[in-house]
Length: 318
Length: 318
Image (tube, rainbow over all chains, first blue to last red; front, side, top):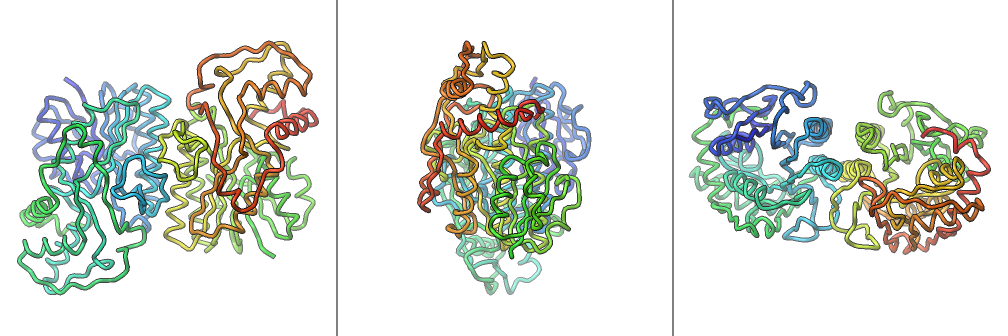
């Protein structure tokens, strides 16, 4: 029986991954500092004898002991907040760069041979090539979050080159689904719950974004790790669609049966570093036979329904 | 009179830059921790009333006070040791990523609007496109040094996007010339001084490398900063030639009037992360009218002669 370690195991994607892996006959060591992750998301996993959870700080605590006899590391812990990156700049540096470096050192020390890393489509900045391929031109970063993920990717590939480490770097579009607790869709539902008559939209609402359902995301990761076998494997994950922010809001409003007045802050970008058009080329992952089960509309609907069922998640501070 | 701040001011390139700038009627604040930099390199500068030197550690000391009323920062301090990056991994992370982040925070705090950054052609990893253009495909890093410089570049561009900061990122080939104290040419001279009969060459000697003379490098930087005006300017610096390691050794031997037996460790790469073929496309910098004064052979010759004149530099531990 294989042992996998998952960092950020109580996070949105991390906890979904843990549930998925536990169904596939393996032992899971889960690490999370519960700063944004929630133990509630692990309630099923914690009942499983093959799951061990440790509340630890990957930046400050000794982490070596958790990496003994581990066959593969899923490094999903991160500061995932692209929009407010400029407000707490050290967070991106520490949580996304330094923590990744510490994980790599511990992987090296314990001779672990496989690393799966959650990166982001944000690293393409404002891409000139759309849909954006994995090998697109070297980008100029527009967000500190993207910059910190580029840094982590670069350090991972240098370790893979030097040591016996196969790495899988997944560049995600925005992920939706059960346990989703931050991002566009979350913000809009929260705003509409507060005020059903008016909705403020950052930018002109014409920013085109891509979304993928978390179940599709995790299945793609699982498949890619089986199919790709290079020293460093970089794979975009997304659907073959995108949607304007305005359209997302309309879908949400329809489900909530609301007709608010839409107010726009104006400008092409919602905030500094906001990318007005995200659409990744997913030929590589689709070459494995993978196809997403849910299209963007279905993903948004499922997410809204989940949040309405778990209204307390709309009240938390992220 | 403008005030420029130079980090790594006592280093090889930094000290040449200081001398160049002091001739152009400006005040220079020079910072260096003298870990690899040498005060000897500043002996002319220290006689100039427009130069102020401070021995400080950019990673640990408070640096804010040196950045008051500065018009432009040249951030040249770095761990420049690509070959031994894997032996002291934390050095690349700290000296090249964290220090750059600290510099950017201080630039932001003091509302400085221009940053010149010394990056490297190593960030292209093993490029598929040769000569390698600035906008080549996003690379997989093969050295931790390259990875740390990619990270620094990414963080710089995110700060430029967010704040009123124009940045110039120069990707150098290997730089040669007066005060050169580490790299291929230095190592070969050192080895030949120890043993004139046999020279050990890492790899098969057929690695193709590019070199540029430090005087040409600094003149190109000065010109580029005048001519390019984007938020983020990325510019390759090199000559339109490259040379095999074997040929470099032959030139050095000829100057030293030695005929050692050449022994090769074998393999395409001299060490893990060594890039067997570095040749940058320099169309962009040449579009300004810039041309290097010295070709590679002349640069090597000048460097060997300088080191023979300053033999004590061959005895230092770097």
